[in-house]
Length: 348
Image (cartoon, rainbow, N blue to C red; front, top):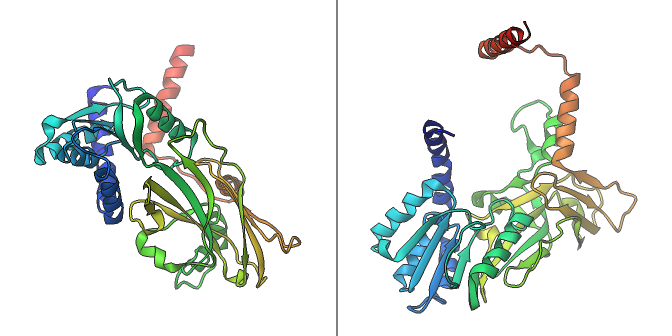
């Protein structure tokens, strides 16, 4: 990639990165809880490592709290100057070492008393994330050091979503069952403003949990199942899935109440049965995830199964069967003509 291409990539990438971190920094609940966890463990004797430092706020706070050594690692090139400028604004630019690198590859002298890392992205418990945490802990965490967060758990609850996929299109006298059938195969991310529309029909249960302080290998995320008994089974039209992050003992962030951490619904067609058991089976895979909903107390009722792979296959099949005309853009035609001309010259 030449300089021009790098600059174009930088410019195109910057708005999305800034928006994401604006959203993170606007989450007062997350900020308050994480700040409390850091404040409880940082003193003038503390060495502090911020991995995936983002805009640098946790490294800056550690420096302002008097930590004797502060290192901030960030892989996004466009955030490196943001960290430095923020450190300058807060009078601690000379107290923070900034490293532009992937944390899996970086080499740093010494160990750290406190490591803060939110490397979750969209793959919180995936193999890459787990392996990164294990590597950080083994390479950089001092004996009796503090890792923040300590644990991450995924919870689920049978729910009623007031504004469902089934309600589209709104205020139009047409059917859109094909679109709805496709959308059921994707989890729906729910913003904080939309969460009052979700009613839990039973207490959330823990699907899976990882303790970053002790884990030694990645987890199996296949076929994780939970069962609830409901008196109002026919009300359920979704399962809501969200995280709970234990920063330190007794400081826990519930992502269902957090603006920056995700919550998702896995919608399905309501069952006609009014009471009984409902089972949620989930494979957490960013590319080929799948889930199913069944009624163990009514085994004769057909299981509902969903996956992005199903939506892809149905759409491709429907595309092949759809009568339509396709026009190529002039640019595409010109490019193909040039390629054909070059091929003829080589073989001529």
